[in-house]
Length: 322
Image 1 (cartoon, rainbow, N blue to C red):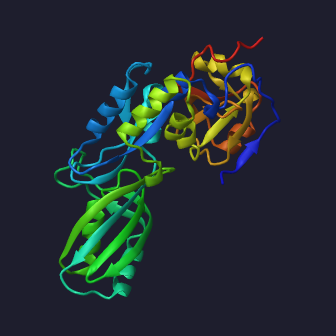
Image 2 (image 1 turned 90 degrees about the vertical axis):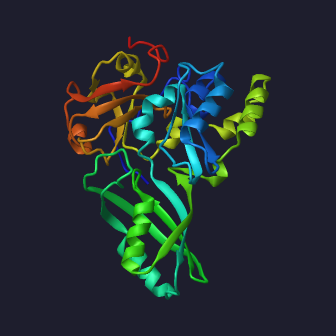
């Protein structure tokens, strides 16, 4: 659980804004994310296009994006951000990933040896992108949070991988195979998790289209279950919570002053962008903090705590400070 530094207790005016889950339908859709389970042979672009066709009449702007590529031969979850949620794509694409895969050995290997190999590759590893990758082929560090042997029978091992976004999972599995020093074939590589999403959250195009039609006819419950507010997806990212009176100014690009901060996450390091949220949990903007959480908390009230870099909320959502 994220630790917070509380500067003062503040109240929010319920006449302005709303909790992300309680937004009006149009705003709810335009600031949400949905996950679809991709079948073999399809691309993330195809998934995004199909979702866009369903909501084309309500998207504002009429824009859609995906939360990271998944090669056509692979199956599993593809996340799609709708309309204004695309503004947070740099955060959404950083969500951690979970995969399962089968390793087929050409001869029997004791499962203790396989488990030992998985232990060695947990933690921070170094990777060079594959030759076919469009990324620059430079050495980069990636965090492998968990490697687990789920099943092992008849020279076949089912592996669970929980890793940082941008990890070349097939390359990781090939490196594990080289360590074991036996011929290994990789099959059934499947993405089973993106951030807070699991396979249970995946929806079909038909299910999504039917839920949207029902919502237009007044029955919104099903669609609200299928779509997740972007704030829910980004709950783990460092955030600053501000009082209502400064929100419209922030939406117009004004700097955030310390006096307007009710609380902030202790994990803010001063080097990475943070999310500025209302007291109802809505994302107001993305900002660059001026210092760490402790340094910001110790600033004078009239000192600048952060500079907005991207506005998410409409400037007319909250009243101007009086």
